Image (cartoon, rainbow, N blue to C red; front, top):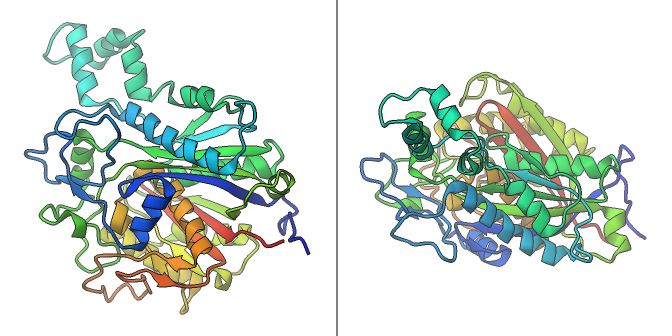
Length: 428
């Protein structure tokens, strides 16, 4: 008997038919997933730019062809585009969804937020007439008509170039919801397919802002690990001695389409996106509201949207950043949602670091692979358990387990929280 193609609300079930990955563990799904299951760390010392006088000198970097390991790398906007393109190429090749050079759906591109880097500010200041105290109005005038300013500040053109290169339909949608960005891009694609507005959707999360200025900003927020002497052991989510997250970069791409559409063209279904939930608390620029309302609400909303009870979730792919605050709040959320019998939970960030805008998409791909292979990736560097975190965090080694449904959590600075429920590929 053929499995149903509509969910409990009568909406088309949304299938994933192609995925692509770029992570600090490697370029491509096979290398990244293999490294994750092996418990291998992709965190290492930064060599792309000078780190003298920085409190944090480690990151989850990605080596791209043509990078100079001892010199200045391409600017963040260029790296974001290259990471996204590599992930998209792999996802589209796997899905087989491109016909005559066109992809039959829109591009939803999650990218870093708008920033004006100091290097560009100084360049605009020089163009405005000096190295001294140049005010913003003078910089703005100097930047008028500047393609460099448009590209570097707004990541302008990235979405348009990717849409043209891969033949997506309509105007590309670029978005940023802090650390939930990748999951938000998937949610937008899911809703477009469910509403019948698109036959399919190309959903991408990409991040390329591992650079000195970003490290300084997060250091000022006391968010980064300073365990520089041993990079591979620095990221330690849910562990007692955790001291912050490790910045990282990369990208993930997912091809979504209705299950009916996938079946009609004979596509291989990798899994389903069963539910999406989002909540915001607007409590603080970095901290969650102590009552955990938005985190708990996002988790419950995603599970309810999937038409499930909490006890039907087999595994949780954690946000799990390794900051004292996040891991405490995620534990509170797990207990509130699942009670005294929570499912296993583990953090990919223990190995690849926090890929920020890409994290939600990368972790959604890892969640699909967890179900495909029946293997729970570990939380490495779990040396001293935190007595306040009484969860099964799959410590240090991957584990065999039958997994049919995964909750993937993404909790962003500013209280932007998105959770996804993914299901195994249906039989029949």
